[in-house]
Image (tube, rainbow, N blue to C red):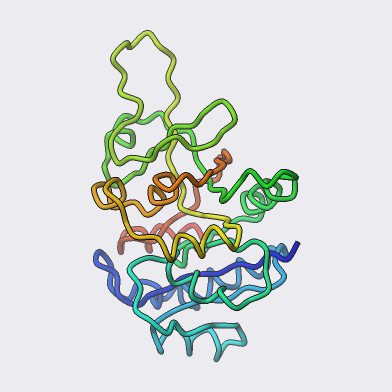
Length: 242
């Protein structure tokens, strides 16, 4: 089984423009993320895929591998799909470019899903974290996921799910961590299928997979990491790096 990692990276970001090129204790955020992913030694290859000359040059000039997107894309999955279409691979793992603390343990759990999936029932796998804080549960910027008895995703939402009508029920809430592992065919299908109502409503690309009947295996992790979405996140990352 040939497994690679793709790190989709765009220069512009609505909340923190240019965040991937910000300095994180001597190196850019995107370079730190790339090096952390390579250092796991889990992949046959690791690429940054981008539409930015600045990011492309940052990786290549530091000895890394990068691919320039040919078309404009609305989401990371589309960017990856274009890049892997002509590559001889089985599984691609999407590592977010703003997560320089990418950890080996969580990525290994995703890889194991496919190594144990003899019947090829899993189209993609992703990570979730158990949360108990009420502010997190109610925060629309934190995506929640509910699962079935086999840990397949039933739904993702910005709303608290499930709705706790009976407070005596012991409900577990899970936060979706946006690291994905795809079978190659699943991400190519995503690229070719149009957006439907649920994805358009919640602005969550993973809902496109569910709407078209793809199966997403969720894997629990307790590794929070630091996603750099704001200047404040960057300052926290700098302190954590030390």
